[in-house]
Image 1 (cartoon, one colour):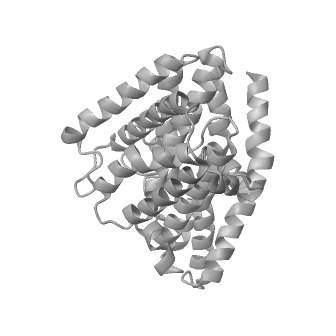
Image 2: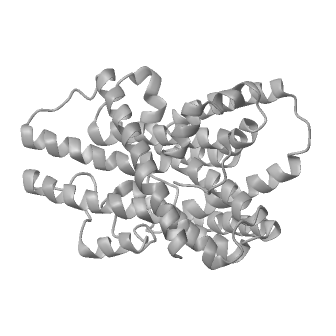
Image 3: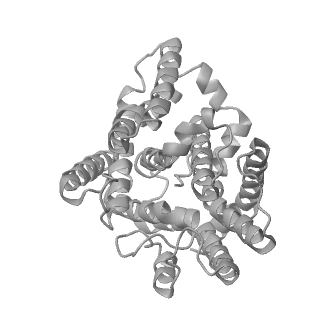
Length: 355
C-alpha cells in the first residue's frame, strides 16, 4: 500500500482516505463491530477494494518520480529508495505481531485471524515474499500481503523503466495485458472459487499497470483545459458510483469497473477539481495520507493488542458503539503519526545515507 516520494497533496489525501477505508473494513471483519452501519455498510462489505486503489496510485506516482522526474539515476539507487520506504516499518510490525500472536496463542490456544506463523512464513516475510505465490496462506501481519506484491512489481518496474516515460507506458501495457490474459485460466479475481496462490500478485501487476497507464494519459491531457465546475460534478458522480459499486454483491464486476474507470477517474479529476481539490489540500487530510503506510500496517497489531487484553481480562468493548470506533480510529491515527515521525522518516534517511 505505499507510494513514491512525490508530494501531490490531492493524491496524499486520497491515499489517507482509502487507508481509513481499509482500517474500517478490518475493524468490521476482525473485531466484529458495525457502528453506523447504514452509513458505512459499503465499506464493511467491500472496503478491501481500496487496496487496489493503492496499487493504481502507486503506479501513477512511481511513474512520475522514477520515470518522468528521474530522481534516481541507477537501478540500485531506486531500489534502495523503495527498501528505505517499505522495509523498516514492515520489519517492525512483523516483530510486534510475532510476539503478540505468541501471547494470543498462549492465552487462547489459537492464532488470531492469520494462522500461518511458522519459521517458513517468517522467512518469506523477512524477504518480502509473503504473498509471492510461495505462501500457504496469510501470515503474521496479514495486511502486509499487499506490501509484498507491491515491492515485487516495484522491482520489475524500476528494472525495466527507470528514467523512461516511454518504457513506463510499455511496461504498463504489458502488465495489464499479461494479467488479464491469465484471468480465465487462473481465476485470480473470482472470489467464488479457491484462489490461485499468485492471484494477489497478479492483481497487483494489473492495477499497478493501470496506474502507469493513467499517468501516461494524465501527461497527455494535462495541458487541455477542463472547466473546474465540470471536474467538480464529475468527481462527485464518480464518488457516488464508487459507493454504489462497493454495495454490489458481485466483487468481480465491481473490481473491473473500479479499476478501469472509477479509480483512474478519481485520480485525474482530483487534480482538476476546484472545490474538491481544495478540500483534498486541507492539511489534516494531507497528513493522513503521509502517515497512511503506518496506518495500514499498524491497525492489525492494534487489533491484536485489543484481542489479547480482551482474552486475558474476559472483558470486551462494545465494538458496535460509535464512540468505541471513534476512539479506535483516533488511536490508530495517533500511533501512525508517531510511527511516521520517529520510525519511518528517520530510518528512510538512515538507510539512504548508509547506502
